[in-house]
Image (cartoon, rainbow, N blue to C red):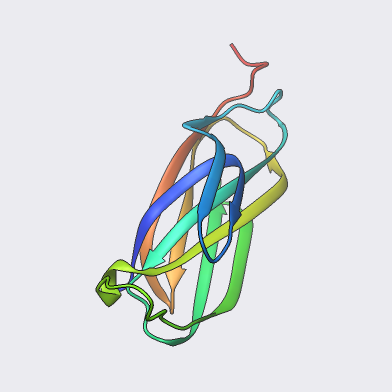
Length: 133
């Protein structure tokens, strides 16, 4: 069964075949101003994939339902045989950089992760501008 193992909002993230790194982990997003824009990253691990091409979708949604970021693509996956982990415990790390996302309001935002047209999780984060009381 496909599942999201890790989901991290951060200032920057980098992945390679050997490792995944998140820098500046965020428990809230605090741009200087709301309304205003802010750049950040998402690091996500997806486990339990079958060999082949997979449709991966991430949507970052404002409290009013507006989709602010919509990432949709096909990612090839081939299980590596150089480890002894069960198939459901290995997969891929995805790093995405979201530049200049415009925040119109403070509140709870969410990212929905979908793999092969099946929703795998919703991940929330609070946003509040530093200019707000």
